[in-house]
Length: 459
Image (cartoon, rainbow, N blue to C red; front, side, top):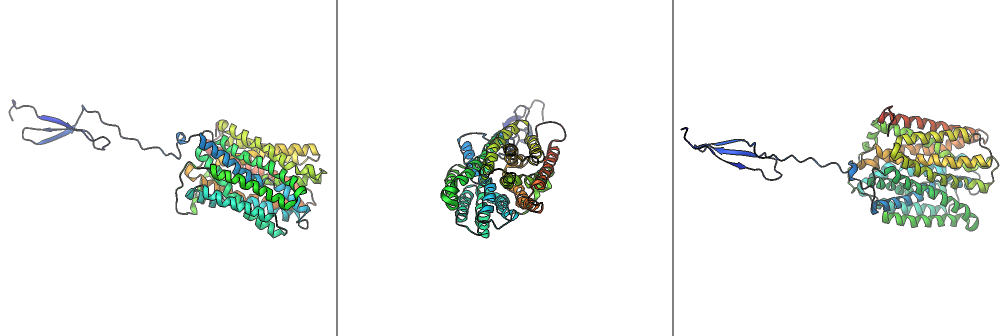
C-alpha cells in the first residue's frame, strides 16, 4: 500500500445496555479486512453486583411498621395463652394433690405439668417444618382448636389418665403450634430491635402467668373447677382469634422436602451445640420452682391462699425479666446478658431459696426468681435467632426446644422423687435445680467464647 493512502475508516460498535459483551472499536483497512481492537475512548460499564440475600441483610428488616407491631401484639397473645398457661402449673400441682388426685404422690402428679411443658416444647421441629412450608396461619388455627378443646375436656375429667390426655397432651400440643409461630414471625420483622421485640412477646407469657392463675384461684371456689377451666378456655379462644388476624411472617413460606438431618446438622456447629446444651441444663433446673413453689411454701407454714399467690407474684415479676434484659441485650450483647441473668438465677436458687422459711423471704424469692427465669425464657429465642439463618429459624429453634423439652419433662418428676425420698424435705430438690442452672450458665459462657472469644465486647 502507498504511503498516500487514506487512513483506515473506523466506527464504534457499542454493546447494548446490560449486555455482558465489551465495547469494542472495529476498523477496516483498504482491502476491507476487519480489524478489531479494544476502544480506549469509550467508558466501560461496571458489572452489576449480585443482589444481597434479603434473609440475612440487616437493611432488609423493617424493624417497625404497622404490620410488624401488630405481629408483636398477636404474638404476645399467643404467649399469653401458651406459656402463660404453662406458668400456672404450680396452682394445679397443689389443687390436684388435695382434690381429684389426692391418692397420688407429688412425683406422679408432677407428670401432668411436666408433660405439658414437654409436648409444648418437643413439638418444635415439627411445628417449625410446617411453619417453613406453609406459614403461620394453619398452625394458629389448628393449634388454637386443640388447645381450647383439651382444656374443655380437662374441665370434665375425673381420672388421672384423663387429665394426662386432655391437659398434658392435647392442650399442650395445641399450645406448641401456637407458641413457635409467635416467636418466629416476629424474628422475620426485626433485626436491630429483635431483642426488645421478642421481650415484649415473652412478656405476654408473664401477663398470662399472672392473670390465668388468679382466675383459677378465684373461680374454683365460686363456680367450681369445671367452669373455671371453661372460662379460661373461652378467654384463650378469644385471644387466639385476635392472633390469627394479626400474626404474619415477612418471609413467604418455601416448601422444601422433609430432611431429618436438617434438625441434626446444626448441632455440628459448636456455638449452636453449646447453646442447646446450656438451655437444656438451665431448663432442667428452672422449671422445678414453677412446679413446687406453692407446696414448698405450705410446708413452711404459709397459708394455702397466700401460697397460691406466689405463682402470679413470680410471673408478674417475670414481666421485667422478659422485657428489660432483652432491651439491654440489644446494646450489650444477648449472650452477655444471658450469662448475667442465668448466674443471678443460680445464686437465687442456692443462696436464697434453700435457707428461706418465712413468708417474707419466700415472697422475695418468688419475685426475684421471676425476674431471673423470665430472662432465661425471653432471651432464648433471640439467642437461637442470632446464630441462625433467618430462613431456618423455625427448624433450628425447634431443634433447641425439642432437646430442652426432655429436661422439662424429667426435671419436676425427678424433683418430686427427691422430695419423696427425703421425707418431704425440699432441700435436695432445690440443690438439684441450682446445680443444673449452674451447669447451664457455664455452657452459656462457653457458647459466648466460641462466638466472640475471651475479649470483652458485644456478643
